[in-house]
Image (cartoon, rainbow, N blue to C red):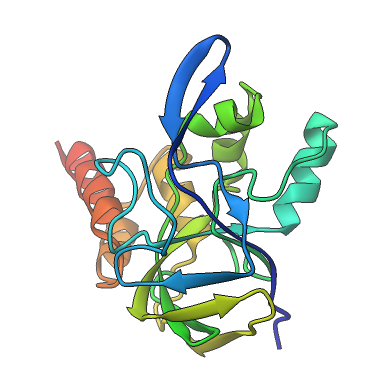
Amino acid sequence: MQNREIIYLSRGLPKESVYKDEAYVSGIWKDQSDELLVGFDQIKGDQVANPEYHGGSDRVVCVYPFEHYAHWESVFDRKLTPSAFGENLTALGMKEDQVCIGDVFQIGNAVLQVSQGRYPCSTINKRNKNNLLLKRIIETGYTGYFFRVLEEGKITADSHIKKLFSHPEQITVSSVHHLYFHDRSPSVEVIDKILGVEELAGQWRKYLLDLKEKIQS
């Protein structure tokens, strides 16, 4: 049985920060919390600054695998703070190659479904004061991913992570990331297989439809 464990829970409201003398407003800065009250559209006390590109019912809970922290700390020779990637849930045993689109988990009394990988943006660089981080995240596929909420509930720091459903198509978050960012000759058949997973979030569905159209044009 896969060992899954919560390391940090985090939430936060948008705030203004400064990077290289330039002010920006973002919800990437999170504070550690003992619990998360998870609703269908957002976590209580947690908001995004730009809803055009972030948030929504397909992207309520942001997950980042704790295993990657050691990798980045080694690569950049610096200690990372909790929720360094703006995630709500930092978890062990939940890497991108260990979860599939459509998988369902119960954490506390909330029931959550993997909806898409994370499409990282440059705010991660600003958050960590590291202009190389975004590029390396895309190279490695260490992006994290999102849950949609099937049943609202409360997650506490000592909540267990229980897998309720493994999607039969077994499309990992890592495989979708690789197809989109790294496959030099993406297959329409593979794209169609991913698009056949109805639980795939609308944003990623659009990305893949655009990619398919580009291949076929």
